[in-house]
Image (cartoon, rainbow, N blue to C red; front, side, top):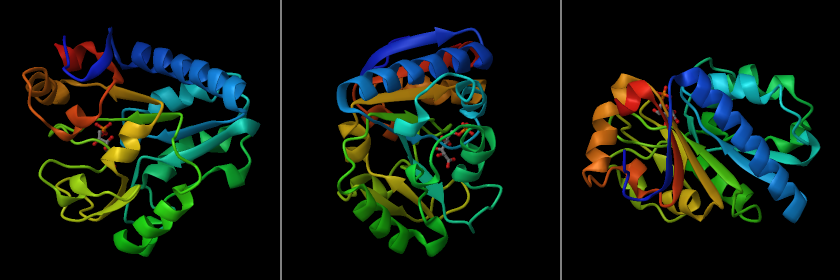
Length: 226
Ligand code: 6PG
């Protein structure tokens, strides 16, 4: 499958093998970043697709003392809410590795989208570009919390407030498209038959949000690429 703006498209039999390969890629990218600059800044993806990858990653020998974690987006829900992206990341990965707590930069989405986006943008000020942004893709072709035809897509700050998101909750915070594109590496994890239509649309030239990420490595499972 060819995706117009992709740097590479890697096809996997299933989510398990996709997750194992991506976990290995993250370990490789962390090693080269730490070797080059002494640290590795990664933005984690939310949703369900990355779960198994995170569970695999926690078993790999990364130098967690030199890893700094950010989030591609967050849902405006109370801290600790089961539906928050950071909750999933703590449960599957961050509670299981020796990363200093102060290296984990959650998005304060419980403050509401506007306040949280401003706070996160100032936190990011001296930390960009990120070394790696992990991204999922929704069935409508959204990525992070950048949804088709949503004003947040035009946001120029490093983190943007999102309202009226079609995927609940409606209020979110997201890294902006420019922050995603300025990362040194971008990696999509896309699995499941539900993503097939959006992938096909992107392959046919549709300018969906996920297609606006330039030069990403796309990891797809068989169910998604058909
Ligand atoms: C979110 C995610 C979102 C997710 C895609 C894919 O808050 O929902 O950040 O961008 O990555 O919707 O979600 P699944 O992996 O659950 O299909």
